[in-house]
Length: 542
Image 1 (tube, helix red, strand yellow):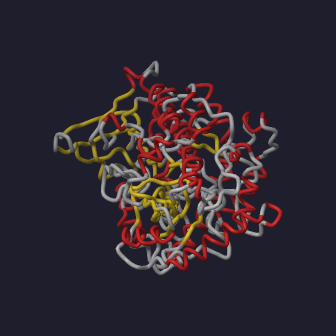
Image 2: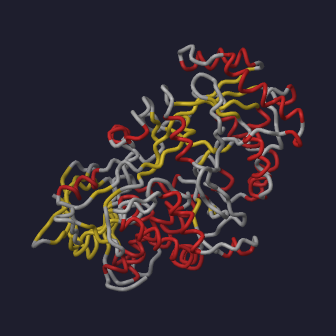
């Protein structure tokens, strides 16, 4: 039996756990961080992320002439969240995030940890049938999620008190919470490297183990029921250790775990060309100029699917089908200009802070990424629609894709482009025109590009599956990050000594996003929940 002792035991070495460790050391606390992964992978899912963060009325927004404000941002958030009357703590956490994010995340990162952001703010989740982001709020870390985690890991390891106040252990799987005298005082588990048990004790325990998006069976079991049965294939775009183990441990001591059917999936998942685990998937940033077709080759409608407006609605539309996957059809010209994948691994020039390489990708297209993915399992190319349909069916092993459906989707769209912008009466073309008005989208969006175009060949078809990513529900916490007990006679109380932060806490309150999200709020939610919980432990305000 290995034994550890500290003032605070943090279970999970993702961005929430790292931020909490920094803040607790600032307050003189001795910290033990327990992580299940190897040391080289410290940082969790954040390390692999694109690195976008949601801020309100930031210096970058002001510089671009945006007049964003807390009231507008909260209105947008609540529109997407669709909270019910009983979602009291989730809504309070949403209000807390919107009010505090710029001062206590953006300025904390830039001033204290050297994090830099790309000067152009991205505009995602703009809203479709209801308001989304009224202004661009997706601030890209220069260095992607890897750069963000590198900054915080460096600050943690180089902390003035790290030599005496920080202990890190890896390949340790926490399994059970220890209660003594009505208070949580530690965790037990297994050192998987040495194959022996361990016990770690402290005055306070912080659960920072992420969500359960890496547990595909569990994702299916908690599938949002109004969407019907879950897809047969769900790709894993989460973390292999995001399994929900500590959610279960919290429930076993009567902690309240809520809203586990609130998921944040992506509609355009493709198989990783070099998978690291079963059904390892990547999330495409779907090209705006591609046509999105159902599994038979019919274009989704009457409102076409197009990225950057409402991710949840897009997933829902795909899941209304008998077979819950989709296709995008485009050509090589569109692919070179617009194709992108969300994540640090697939954005080499931004990740490595290579400005020349980034500008080259913007101006000439990310041909390296295109060439890497074009021969991966979900992509086919052809020189005619007839050949393309044959290859699509061969890839899927069915005859579901009908040539006539594809022609009926592609040819009228191309004909409308030929008639000129004055006669465009297609919603996708209108949205492309609107997107190109914003400089952040103009450079990465084609100007009304036909699909069948001899100058843009070959044709490309991408088979896209639903991809699991983040868990929006989780361990319920109060506004100080304390884990709440299961309600008894309608009342819950904080469990002494136990905190939850980051995705494990549903980014605050067991689901601060509600059923949807405005994007960029995940990394920020990890940082804010961690900082608040650390201050609560030492009885201070952030």
